[in-house]
Length: 432
Image (tube, rainbow, N blue to C red; front, side):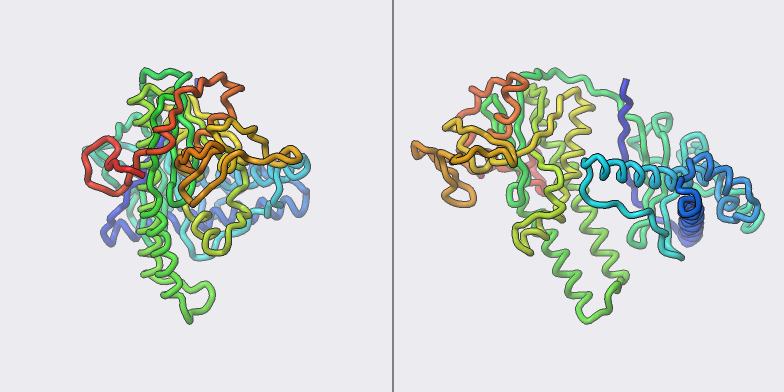
């Protein structure tokens, strides 16, 4: 049985005393991380092997001279060293992928963190106590001897049950601190039919275009998200103008954090819209069109590359997959080559990337950015045509009946805006 976990980030608003404690914990975590990286790299240079997490615990945890390990609660220190060991294990796995040809970019050996910086510190559930609505985070015995404190406290979010929490991470980011709660998710019982399927085509202006075999369709708007990202890039460029390379400031941290929060909000809202649509229509399968590595080397021009790469579509895909698993909805990821060129209404052959037959030509054509014309002259939404073709990519394998994909659904999808105050389930609906 697979156990699913969720994650919730809460911004910490510390007073001066709590802020000093958090900065100390995260700075010690940064130093201990560098100690673990140093030992791992030196062992590799001398023996050609990397230490396991148990080796790191033994070598650094039993040495009294390692003040960074002693300054943290033992369980927290072990979690930090385990993360270091896992990073080197991932590096070895990538090297094996290079040898097998399954990984293209050559990985780099994990490098040291910036001296004087702050790193994530993890507290497991077994080390945290709850009393009077406050969570107690223990500190190392050395800290009590040095500073006279043995713990710090944070309030527990009202929407979380303490027994479900598995670990809490203190995450420093852009001059602020977050408490990241990792908790166990319970399965949600919903009535869905796996033969009812929703195809998703992603883009920029239309972030997600969704078409089902029930005759429904909608588009999650991406224009406002693109506008947020454009404002961020212009603001960064203006502030950094005339400054040396690597320049950073409090204002840059503030606008970066604001932009990142908006992106996370968009991901959660868009994913929830897709899942709510599936639940309302008893759709039991979601097919997401995705080409692996498509963000590594896009060739759409400098400006379009920047917009495409910075929009967090991959995180949105993963979030939709996570919610699908929680609601017992099948999630299928398929390559999407030629789906935008091929005519769905004319049942054109859909070749895979690199396997296009000699002389292959689509029956229809794209008249404008948003309009696709079939061989018989029927005009439909271009992105809906792509989403329907994504369904065709897997229809034969999974025996999906696509006769319910109507011309009306392909021609007039509903438009869903993310940032509105509407009370409808889709927030705001209009013509695309």
